[in-house]
Amino acid sequence: MSEAKTIGPRPYHHGDLTRALVDAARRLLEAEGPSALSLRAVAREAGVSPAAPYHHFKDKAELLDAVANVGWELLGTQMSTAKAATTGMQQLTALGIAYVCFARDNPALYHVMYDAARDKDEMPEGVQTNKDSAYCMVRDTMIENGADPQQDTHLELAGVAAWCGAHGLAEMASFKQFDHLKAELGGEVPFFEAVLSHMGLFPKPL
Amino acid sequence: MSEAKTIGPRPYHHGDLTRALVDAARRLLEAEGPSALSLRAVAREAGVSPAAPYHHFKDKAELLDAVANVGWELLGTQMSTAKAATTGMQQLTALGIAYVCFARDNPALYHVMYDAARDKDEMPEGVQTNKDSAYCMVRDTMIENGADPQQDTHLELAGVAAWCGAHGLAEMASFKQFDHLKAELGGEVPFFEAVLSHMGLFPKPL
DNA sequence: GCACTCATCTGAGCGGCGTCAAGATCAGTC
DNA sequence: GACTGATCTTGACGCCGCTCAGATGAGTGC
Image (cartoon, rainbow over all chains, first blue to last red; front, top):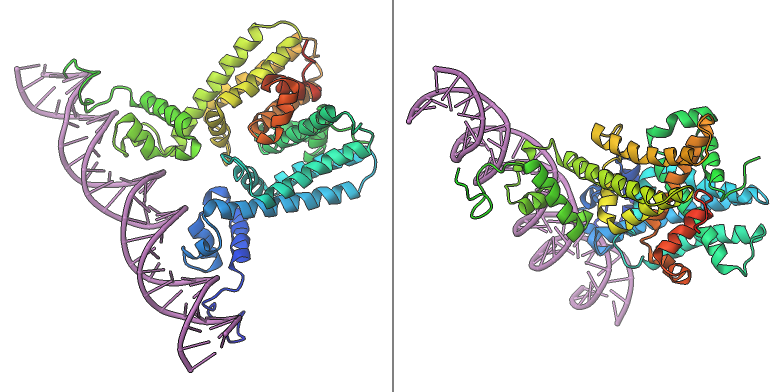
């Protein structure tokens, strides 16, 4: 093959189309939203024919799974960073805020992350792993801050409640309905903090 | 026109296609799920040509809005019934349980109710009204049970938190992930109660 | 009873979608 | 240098949302 890999017409064989397709999908998702995310559009964006993706993904759903996986990875990273930047009880708040802010900043990706799991008995392994790891981060932080790991049911209930609350807020946060409340509280993040702490799941912010 | 309205071939003019289409959509939704809900399928189910719906709805989204509206109406009714069946603080719990149970029993409809609102600056009036009325029911119940209507911000925060928590739980409840927790607590409804009360939004069940 | 009007419904058709089968292309291997 | 198998293209199928010209017939005024 010629060394002109980055210039001129794309070579017949792409090289790493799997990754290129996922990247193209994320680009489209950010630019046009979830409804514009057709397999054909992704293939166009990646510069290949509409049938090319089928050599890398079983179907459209499998591509979306891969995109969702990237999302869970990214969310995990951001939650991890947020946790590391704080100490003690504040870590739980930081995790919640990081979660909701991720959803706010990547609404389309966040949507795909949950939509890909819908109508599915079990998720692909990679996705499940990344999702679990984010979920366990909450649980671990609770234990590190005094929750009793022996009281399994109670601990898990707390984890579920936190996850549900954050997800609910993440979905609602985009509604204009709450704009005046955000303004009253001095911005979006204070609004998030207030709602989360009101749920009793996270300690009051300083 | 002949009087044979209910038998033989449908008359050229339907009579009340608007309602028939919404009903057909709900039937399809229940039977096949949201992904099977195409305008053409709805028209087929209603026994008309694929173009007929366009004389009653601007586009597919407007049909979905109408379906969503029925959903909010139905949810409002069920919440209202649940509230009337209890007294005092238990009413809040009843509202939350009714909300989550509605989502569990009508997952496809529930999905449409929120999906129809997505990527939309403002919702059609009827939908907004029905949604608001359900939301206000929570707020009113809080006031009736001692919340201070003067503390506007705090009250609204409590309402938002409750709504977010219930929505988050409603979406998560379908995940198999929590099956063992449900079993441990003795069923789905106790699980719902436990999570909601854990959020501190609703009083502990008796 | 009759003609007219106009909302309603049909049929044909457009471009886009997900998917598949057959064939072209080419990197790596023997 | 020929072969193999993975990768990509072309072309096609049926379904989709949506539009438009034309058929239908209920209601209205005469």
